[in-house]
Length: 310
Length: 288
Image (cartoon, rainbow over all chains, first blue to last red; front, side, top):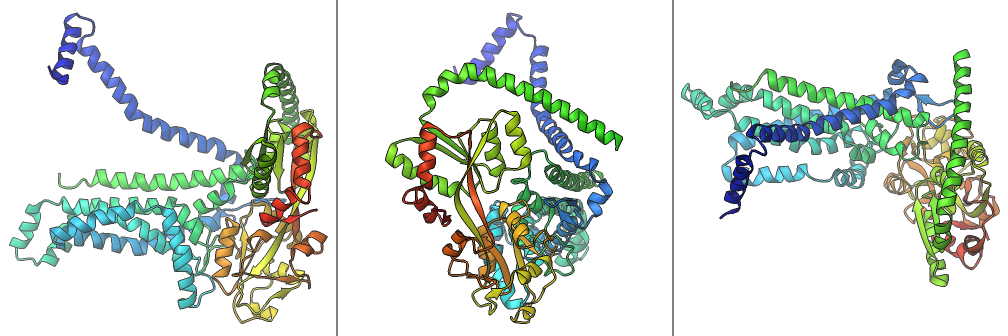
């Protein structure tokens, strides 16, 4: 008797003896899986709650508006200043510039892999891209700090290589694989019949790609872009290492900046437990949490609203 | 204002209450644990500043080799080291700063008398790239570079290049000393890059000809040019005599005057031929 047969037999015996009804078994299984499924959401809710508990007390000292529009961040001085506008500007500038690199590169890679590349090339390149996606970010940061920064200083003659541009390139390096890999899946899943239809109407291969395949997979591509950027927004190690860490609103792409995650990581270790500085850092975390949360919510909304090929 | 005051009063009452609770708990714990700790005393626990950590690691290793005593040494930050002493959670607390008034008050409330021992000096040295022609500064010039009033090397007799000032992040102890001794309370200019570790500053300054930063004396390498400040060269000698202006004392704290094995270890730590050699080897400046 195989293991499966044995189990089925045991289950039958239990039921035959009337110990547990079929309905009870279903109910138990239902509850178990409900708990497993809900655990992720419960955990997220707990994290959000914790962030609020630790972050909101700072707003007794400073108004929310002053917090996000203040340009001075001097948490250890007397009296302290808690203005995070330079950090918001830092995150925004780095992510926007990296989007400029990452979106065309990511979508281009995806289109090439799904539409143009021969299947042998695709079978090699796609796993490699996914491998890059798993590269530890500290390695990317180290590369930016030790290789890219001195190179920028020497070739561009700028005063510091730890700046917005360097951080943006390193972040793009991180989000291109995410964007390429998800977008490629979306493009690849466009039904063959649509391509054949376009080609039958006399469209060239390029015309098929940009007027049929690309619009048809736009939802999936948007999701890919948003997820790739969300990863860049929350990324800490890279910006901590290569963004330069000056709390100023950047005037050019060669200025050093201090994005929000880098600031939290740099200061949390030494901020007195449950002090004002500590609460201020958690409040930054809270704002960051809501930004990435909004990004993901937007991605989900679009993905559901314009569901592909119904 | 009125609401504020009510809050303060309320908080004070709470503190008194919790202090009472702590005493009761401590007595209870003492009765239960007393017999066990007597047995486990052959191990000395050390806890606190990561700046002091290498010295204590080196010294405890030497001590163990000689006397066979076991240690547990953990780097948790100065604040946590002092707190552990106040709460009687550790035998020796390490700190790279002096104890704060609020901490003294807490210790007093807990019935703990905190005893400080200076174990070493840490000189903080401004550094530039070796190619930089500027190798000497006055303290006012250095202050100007960091508060943002001097922005070009040409103002200091160097190349016509913008100064890239680099500092440690604002919550580190090194930064605290810098603000006190160099900036004399001024705010670090927004353009200053804040990096998270001594190592990051070494790497940034040694690769940027326009940069100026500061590191602990143990981090000086041939790839960095130390700055002569007001004519004083940053050598171990000058730090030891107190001529070098940007230095701090590294401390250990004990819960009341140490006795037994802990006292023996503290004496070992302060001995010129023993513990102070460990100080020298780990790149700090010995006191004796």
